[in-house]
Length: 456
Image (cartoon, rainbow, N blue to C red; front, top):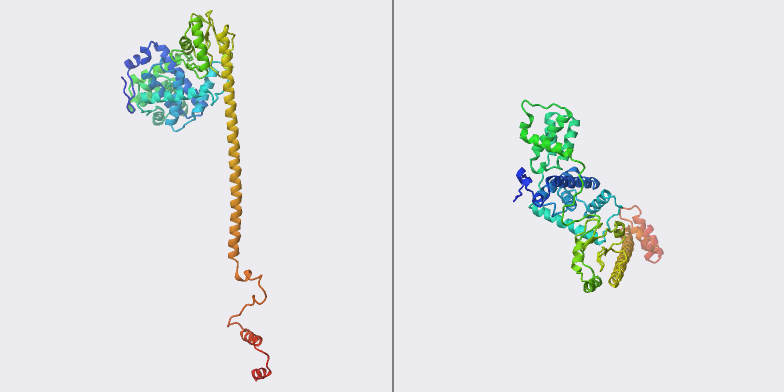
């Protein structure tokens, strides 16, 4: 049993030799090629997703650690690589959408298998299956790691060591490339980052014929042993001696990002036809479904009974409904789109046409719902604009009333009669006496006696 704690996930050669894949019958070379293949998928996917190198390095280390605890025959290497990329992106705070991860891996597999490039439909059943499987695999990885995903890469030691040794920029680039390539081996689960950093520096210096101080020996300053450095150099040399890694099918659950092979439950009409066929020719529907679940990841060969008839890939890609092999009385099996003899075969073809029509109707219904939702969104935007215009009108009215209240007193009196607009001057004004006499004369009757008295 391998227990995981922070920064102590390091195995011995004996533990690697007795890995779960070896116990399940996978030889050493096949396991090594699958590890290299999975790391190449991670590196290519990280480039297409425009992720930093730290994310790709973390994903490869998690990938190597996971297959030290689980077997390649149980977990598909392609699905595990996708889950490691998605998990590492979140750990390194460079998260990507699960839809982007699935589309990238789908495109990579289509290009590797020379298939037409077709993006995944987010509304399809296959997309939902891939999404759930990716989340499920991530959960298995976290459980096996004990939710401890701390990774210490050799890259951060490389720059410090080379600056201390006074290396050139060309040597730094070569060492950096070797450090990236070392992640495809099991060095990350056998040695600490300091040892791997010293090993790649030693290998790059020997390749570039750059002398490094040996008296005293420079690797002793960085807590590394010469024996471990030699092991690192041998692993890198062995890595470069391998041919290009290809996918080797060893997983029992044969899954692919291009064509799904998960067994599916047929609808009620198909189940009834299977029951009638069972009564007619003695075959069981369960054996047919097991044959469908055990077929390869490309649906190129289907084994039912004792005969095999290859199914063309183009025929399978024409329909979104999974093809189910049909065992006939003469021992031949057929795929959707081929002629089936017998009444039961005709009924099965008709039921599949009906299923295809129902699927198309559901797709059109979803399209209509999306159009209605767009119309409702536009109506809500128009209503919001009308409310905004009414609010602007109210604001202008309130502003006008405010300006009206702040106008001066003489401006508010412009519309009054002449008598109302008369202003009484102050006592300090020079014409106050004349004004008083005018006012008295206005309000008292004319009298000559008073006029003479005022003159005297």
